[in-house]
Image (cartoon, rainbow, N blue to C red; front, side, top):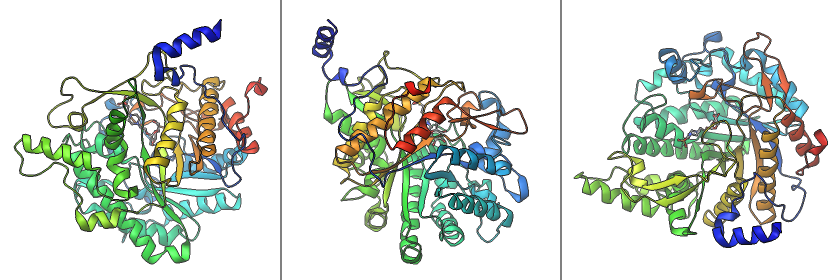
Length: 499
Ligand code: GBH
């Protein structure tokens, strides 16, 4: 009876039935992860550290924004104290040890080390803090994976224009050089930028996040261009001055929703992927470099129609294409969820804007299991498909999953988070079994933390933190016990054992 219904459903909905509406995925192939595959967890400085002005730290654009516009954060909160990891790193370390994490992805707050962003003005206490973190991790055989920039630009550098000014190329690569000098003897995995899509679209396009620049279809592209140049310059610098001795790897973390087409139209999917992922991945990881040809062509055409003398997204040019092409030892991927895409019937968004340039409608299936946040649905098939897409379109580049996680209200009995992790970790294993070059997975996040515009109303942690107490004790949720078991067995355990 059930198989008959399933059969009819497949017949009716075709490929749609591929994306299941119950947060599960079938296991295919080996049941164990390869020995060299690494499991860990991720956080970011502003979201967990607190101590926003402690010991000489300078203000970042997120300190400034949350202080000046508390009404723009859902609960009026900020990261002034957050999970207090600056004061209480020992508690994070205990949680990492309890999980058996093999690596810890955290970010360095630029303004803790260089309060004004200028590398000639060091804050020794900030340096001491990160040395302590890195050393304690290593003593416990937990590999540090360091994000250099997770959205907290020094206010002093924003005054120069931040990512809207090409000065950021030197400002960032000078900062990166100092990080290599200070920590590169012990840090072997570096991520230059976390989610350029958000840095540039939210910061310089729609302008809903700091530095609040509203210049859609213009500012966002200027930001992408400068950011890619800063990334490429940093990579070359490392190769030239540090790689031989330090032997580390450098990558960049990109966020992407996987995109399905209801009508199985691969052109729609490829075009949308070129805009949402390719804009950043293509210049770094493709064979030819520069922005994806279709994106360059379409934006140039629209720009001409708007009566401009040149494209809003000019080619990177020969010089920069060469520097940026190949400037990544791995691609970091933050995957949370997926969407359906179809071409828009009428022009979308304002003119100009990235939305108008892309002109693709994105929607969800009302049957998909939704999280507390309205943008997260549990679609493990999207992760498997994305990894295969990277394998096929980007020459089987090494992939590190730098974030993946589920959002709820913070309950300790978080079965839905376990379901999410179980199916997504299975999706990664399926992809590996199918020849994808994925080498690590970081769950977002170690602890409940400051979720940007959502403040403390949305929780992603494996550990709960009582934000109101000064002790800020970390309490393992049920999902922490599940993830511990994943790490210990290098497999995808059933989770009934927890009952
Ligand atoms: C990542 O950001 C961040 O790296 C991390 O700091 C954060 O805590 C984590 O994920 C969880 O959010 O327009 O409705 O499609 C992801 C942030 C969330 C920003 C989704 C863009 C799009 C919402 N992104 N959001 S929607």
